[in-house]
Image (cartoon, rainbow, N blue to C red; front, side, top):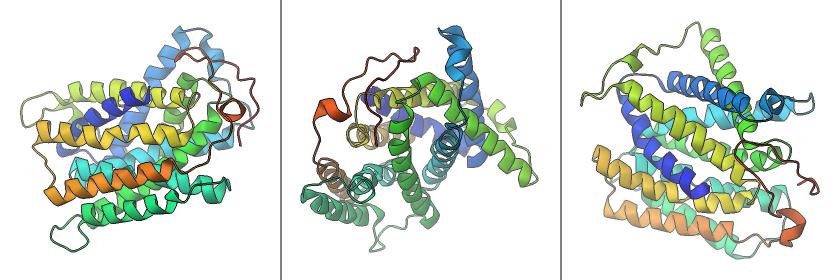
Amino acid sequence: MVALAALLFAVNGSVSKVILQAGIEARDLTLFRATGSCLVLLVVGLIARPGWRRFRVTRRELPLLAAFGVLGYFVVPMLYFVGISRLPVGIALLLQYTAPLFVALWARFGQRQRVRPRLWAGFGLSLAGLAIVADVWGNLELDALGVAAALLCAVLFAFYFVLGERQVADRDAVSLTAWGFGVAAVAGLLARVAGGHLPDWSVLTGKTSGGTPIWWLCIYLIVCGSVLSYTLIAASLRHLPPTSVGMIAMLEPVLGSAVAWAALGESLTAAQLVGGAILLAGVGLAETARVSVRHNESHAPIEDTVLAPQRDSSPAKT
């Protein structure tokens, strides 16, 4: 599930950048993506059993669902769009995928889990790799706003992984993702109205410089780059801890760089490729530093389908 989602996200990076280059603002594209994805998931959820009942929510769930939707489905994608619009796709993805490092640090300091000493070696390697990729010596001039957006995106992406693990214990992947995108759509619309502007999606009816209708790209953005990919990630959290999901998801920067090179002609320098490898190695070390508890006590496999909600009888995760 995670590997397929990483592939879909990787292609989505280049697709989204082409749409952004057509002239739409990152916040308007984020709102369009959230609205379209929510509608698609509502249709799917209503058609498949048990229908509308899967979307029921208790008062206790609302605060977490609101935070999950606003941060994970609105702020994270918007920062991602800002990052790829101002940086090469490969560099933006490398910066974003420091998120698993923050998940590992949360496990150590937030949840006070035991970790192996290699956490700190991984942290050091990640910082060194980041310094090389971002070219702190100034040989290349990366956009400061783009770098800041990508790094903040990483922090909130880590939050998405951690909070998502808690949410999937009580809710199936389709309803959880639909709620996430629905909350994001409402938050995005309120933000635009509060700013005195309505979203401008007129550019989406045009064509790219190569003559491709932009709405074709929007179909991929919503169906494959949003609905399928986010649902797969949510479903995978029923079977894997966030650190494992983050580790496998590191396929995305590699695949995303390859797609951007083939589709957009973007390439990284030799130094940045080395820095990216060091960065990913450091994140991998940090992710594997957590001392696992017995598998059947925390993350026992749960029978799951993408459409049907399942009851989880295992103890609540903390």
